[in-house]
Image 1 (cartoon, rainbow, N blue to C red):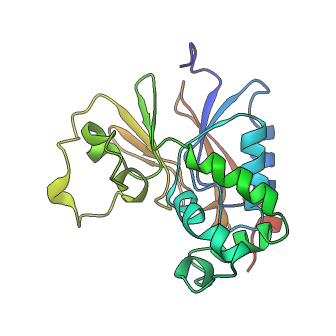
Image 2: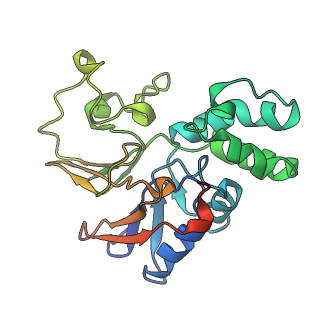
Image 3: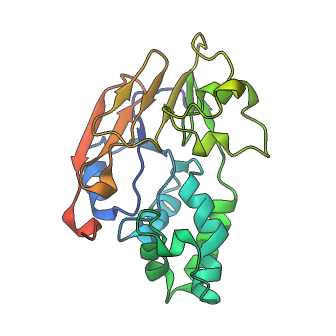
Length: 225
């Protein structure tokens, strides 16, 4: 897909933290190519702006579990005022902020939902397997359209261990988000880059050429206490 990985960066879960994202991008090379691991939306204050930024700049993006939730509930919440589900009412799910974002912009809502509907569940670039959740155990079944494992699995989740493939010796390296850590988590053949931006920590970009990270502390405008 890309002849060179030098200026290719993968960015962790943004979760509506628009101003933090803009600050992070300014730290990257001007000709940087960006790939997002999903969860652009919910929790932070500017989901609409983050998604529009990614679309307008034609960046690559993986579908995360929060894009899935938005696809499932947002239109019903904004148009039909159906807000009885946990995504819309539970603060930890973060849908309330997205509903507020789109409440007066039904046209953009439709545009964004159409875009979300076409997002891939994974990308393979060179030796890298890029997913939203910890996808490495499911690498051999990555094209199973009925499974949500690629965007819901967490690295510490052992509830489905019996279904996992023997992934420890895979030659691919899984780059993913979804699992919130204060610092980037690195294993033998995986790197988790969700560093809790929406919780006031930081947003991380990973250079695929060097596997070095560039980080940006969360902008206070992006989150509501």
